[in-house]
Image (cartoon, rainbow, N blue to C red):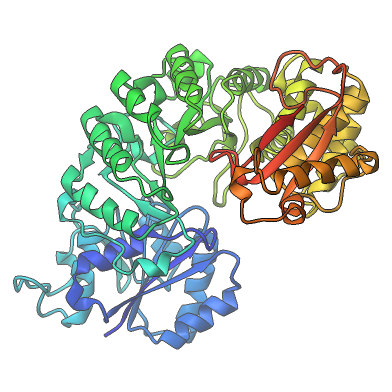
Length: 588
């Protein structure tokens, strides 16, 4: 007997915790009988189909989400053609809320596991394993599928829904990652709770009103395994990690005390719910140990009220400011376009207020009208029209036209390229002064890209710098030489470019001064103390020296021309843990 659990992920770096949880819950005794296969949406359907066929499963189940439903639907249909006797099951949020309709449309699907799947899958597996005669662990009988709670399945011409499955006890969930070597260079997803205390109308978590926590001691033991394995990133999937302060504190204190200097932990939190004790713990953590994702979504009070989101924006701003003042925690803030009562101008105001908090990442998302969410039932009331196919993204609302959605999409791309990349930090901070607001800057930049037909996905970083310079020379209010120096500084902060960009200063007259500097460093290592094993020539290759007429290394403040040009040394062996920027030394 072989039961195949198949996942189609958005990227290779992602993993699918659902299929690992199902397998682990079924028990170690079935290790060889339950097989996991992970693919990505970038794999061809033909490749996935042939791979599954080659595995020769006796039953198969697919994990379904908005990002993979189209390919899973097509794949499962083709699989049924080449393996017509194979029972094909589905599970996951994309199929849990309209299971009967899916079975009516997809005649090749055997059934759907609805809601939390661990216990349901264990019983379903045993149903096939023991030919409907005996259940594992206790001898419970399963004479037919009707006895297994949490299923919607086909029986001849009938579609049968069994009784609702009770929520699983979190402390019964085993550790997912038995073989951590299989997760090298991949994100490891971890959950210490399920459910959410908040009722945001656009979110499926609002459906599960019970918040359940895994025992903190169990969580710490499992996290220690990830720390010992030196996992690169552990992403908690808890919907609001800090909804129970005692739980939050225990976990954060543990990862701080057992920091291995490598692993990064990602948490989704409600910033306006943070306590002084939580902020204190965060302030002492190693830079890069923790990153926080904070969903602001909107600052419009009417919008927040309408989506059942109780947020104290003023407090959120203060808390984000406190977190960022420590310069040790990566902060990611989210906005959602397409919410009720949020028009184009209102969204621009939300953008400017969130931008002013200066997060490391500012994500512009677009409302997804998810099946099963309260927003799905209210969409007609708000005049929300959305795509019929996944990811069911908003097309227009009573407050936002389709044309305005398209404009915001282009602005989103500019934010990704020029803000979220963290590659234009100093140039952006100066150029902002030439516009009425940050939103106006990115709006104009998006128009400029469109007018000139510039390529968004150019493989060349320098291409984007040159466009930025063109834009700044046309719309910026400062002298062109300053923008060139700012961009030069930004580009060398990230990378020791061997091919100098065309806008960079000609350094040929300074070559001898640079040689003299490295010759003095060899043997003394007064400034480059970490390079004692290297010669002057090697140090020159591993670092970079630049000359500036403006104090471009400053963030904010005046940018008046210096009385005398300054040399700046870029040290790439020592980087900022949050931004990956090189250490810089201004030389006299």
